[in-house]
Image (cartoon, rainbow, N blue to C red):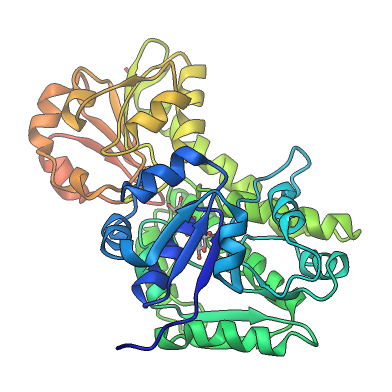
Length: 433
Ligand code: UGA
């Protein structure tokens, strides 16, 4: 008989919560996961995973015996001492993180609770301290999550590092959390709560800064005839810089970078400190989404009445997440210029359709390109690399493609009859017609 592993509780079964629950179950822990939405709990109990995340559905079904989904907080509290809080912290109108769901969880904990509250939700630095003040006696550990959508399970199972923040008196609780993560092999960093909270925000803000930086370099490359992919390759070989997150494109999106960069900027602002660099990071990102419009106009002049196809809508491949996707801004800008927008995404079309009511959704990439005056590759889905681009060229009214992710092979596209333009490459300026 294998030894019984420490039970784990998970509160909030969104992306992070479900991955956390499924992965700890895979590691052999009995897991009770609680969400307030009955419908979600019921479908997960049937093994139905509605978010598109590689491996996650299999993991949930394979570990069904160790995974319990419930709406009942008491069931959760009775089953596990270690409780991971994974509720979302969306931005408020002020740009601060909305902590109402975190607070609601805290309010449900009984006075004198001997549970360990392990905060995975991304919260402003100082949150842990205020929760501990409100609930003396509660053990509190900050354990921020660094997984990426699309590779969430692999990221969880092979972490670069696990950050565990605890203050004086909570050393045992921090040790218990460290033991959960020990089998995964990543470096375990033990620190204080406020520093752990800042590590999460600073990491996301730094990655977003890298992206805005390379996007600005790309814009300069276009002016001076350099190729940003070559520049990024050369920069990335310097170990101090590193090669990741230097892919120029049409801006970052998703549920994390836009929210967390603003939240950190506001957190600093609320203390009276103006975080100038992040102001620029956000502005560069907003402008980057819009630059595609000017690129199209350089080729075809006015977009009024022109049919523009968007290939990909999700904020990145391997997810159907549309939160803060660059496609939302781009579609609105194109429509603002009078273009007729048609779009296709391999998995996000349904979610996108709810958000982009006036955009025509096509059933395939080729159908989207039919009769189009131009196309923009927005999300680098592998199926776009495998498309028959010669056929696509034949179907379009004008085979013009702006590759917003520098994903396709420019030479093959040109050989297939396309006017091709990427991001941060020497510009191929077509005569406006
Ligand atoms: C991000 C972080 O990478 C995770 O470490 C973190 O845990 C997560 O936020 C979170 O806070 O929950 P995620 O938003 O899933 O993960 O996706 P990323 O792969 O980081 O991509 C974010 C955006 O940046 C995408 O729109 C992507 O297309 C864009 N990107 C990424 C670039 O434009 N260039 C790059 O070089 C890399």
